[in-house]
Structures are given as structure tokens and as C-alpha cells.
Image (cartoon, rainbow, N blue to C red; front, side, top):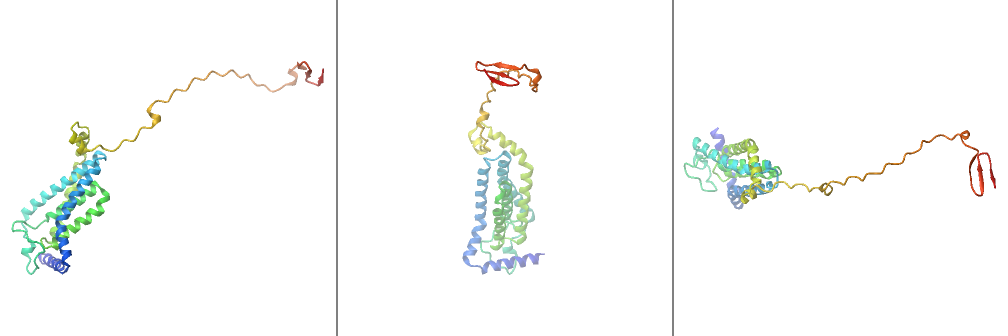
Length: 257
């Protein structure tokens, strides 16, 4: 197993030395720049969630906090395992592109990779659409640690998974209580607390017709009774219906007067 990881480490570092110098510098910068970019994305995710429901804001706040917890756990694990850096332990390997960390700064797991994996999943939970950006960022950041020669491949692979699992579990377990705290903060009278929690989702405007009750309909007068309609029966009527000054109307004939 040690031989396989040593060979893979040598293959990657040999490839790194064959790349153009500008690409090597880019990899060196990315190992640190990735951390800064994740920090900026945490701020943007929190700002977006300020106008969301309390649960959304809780996840956005928990993502960086859980990432910090993952880093502490990684550091504790490093102090227990005490794996030497490959830039000192692997014989026949080319010099690293960056300075090899001092003895006592152990290799397993990779702190950078743990932070990257934790941040990628935390941001994906807080802002699902950005997962297509954060996950490749985390993988490239982890690979860059092997590329520059300061970690074994298994250091970064375990670091990615370790950080991702810790953040996922912590966020899932603590979202509900933190959402309650967020809701209480939004009702606080302290300005900075209320600003941090944000205004929450905008309430829909109340329809104009709902602002005041509709007037009651005016009472309608009772309708006059309608006489009963009966079918026409000639025998029931007198021959003379009525006389006018000029004409006499009869049932059987009409004659001028």
C-alpha cells in the first residue's frame, strides 16, 4: 500500500514539474486562494439567506461554523496519526513546488482538503444551485495539495470526505434549533442582532378589496304579489268586454258605433 501511494505521489509530482511555469504558479496560488474564495461565498450565501425563511438563514450560518469544526477535527486527527509529509518521506521524489512544511506539521489528513470538502457541502446545503461550482473547486483544491508536493493522494481524498461528512451531519442535526434562534433574533430590539438575522421573506401585499369590508347590500323592497295566471276560458267572460267612446268591443263581433 505504501509503495502504491508513493508511486502515485511521484507520478503526480513528476507531472507537475513537466507543466509550464505559469501553471505551476497557478496551482501554488490556488491552494490558498481557494480558501479565500470559499470565505467570500459564505458571506454571499448568508446575505442571500437574510431574506429567506429562518431555516434557510440557519443553514447559511451553520455552513461556515461547521466548516470550522471540521478543521478542528482534522487537526486533532493529524496529531493522533502523525504521518510524515511525503516531501520528506518519499525517496526519489522531486522537490515540491512549495516549501515542505516543518516536521511536526503532519500530513494525514489534509487540512486544506478537509476545509474544501466541508465548505463545498456546506455551501451546497445553503445554496443548492452553487454546488456545480463549489464541488469542482474543492476537488481541484485537494488535488493541488498533491500537485505542489506536500500531501499524499490519500491525505486529500480522506480530507474531502471527512470534511463533507462532518458538515452534512452537523448542519442536519442543528438546523432546527438554530432556526428558532434566528426567528427570535428577527424579533429582537437590538439593531445589530436584527440586521444580522435579516428581515426575512417579504410578505405579500394585501389586496385592496380586502382592506375594508364590502358594504352590505341595500335591502330590496318586497315585490307586489303576482296574480295567479289562469288559462283563457271564453265562457267565463261577458260578451261586452268594455266600451270606448268610439267603438264597442264585443266578443263575437266588432262594430263601429
